[in-house]
Image (cartoon, rainbow, N blue to C red):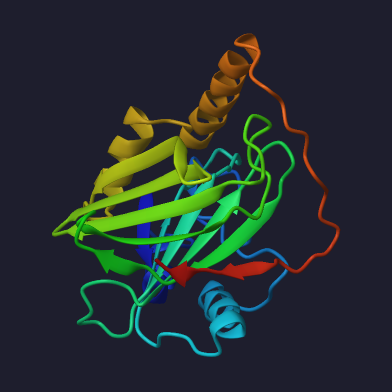
Length: 236
């Protein structure tokens, strides 16, 4: 995955820069896939979404954890915007999580305000699930997020709970590395078409669940509005 400071995007994305903004490039950064239905620069769209829900927005840096686009193909089940109060903050004041599903193409934004948990040794929060993601998961779930950042390492985990019982858990543990042309080249050769691999893995897991005759939950509705609903979570 890629990790950006939104204030530095124009320095690394564009013609002649480290990352292309051309759709059919080997690796590119797509700006238009985030916060669909809103206008302005990516940074302004993030700040507007947070301000609309909280009435205020952290004024420090915004960092984005996301997938890149490969040879014109893009899908990222989860993008995370970390909003800091200032450059000296150890942990973001607010987190905007952008969840995407497939094949429906829905997008749901959650504005998170985690609090630190001594028991988890991480920043955590929970809220009701708001969007259909998998035909094998019902809508009556609670999401429990956990974020841990130590030095150059970042761990993010998401747990689906039903009546307080853990049903499903997904997580990723990442290590920050400098963004440079050499890094991008190694990434392309070592992990080509990552978004295609993500999609293939999703369908493979779905096939295994179908083969096991797991219950199927249909999509409850299709969104017709162009503006994204934003759900504000409360700290646990």
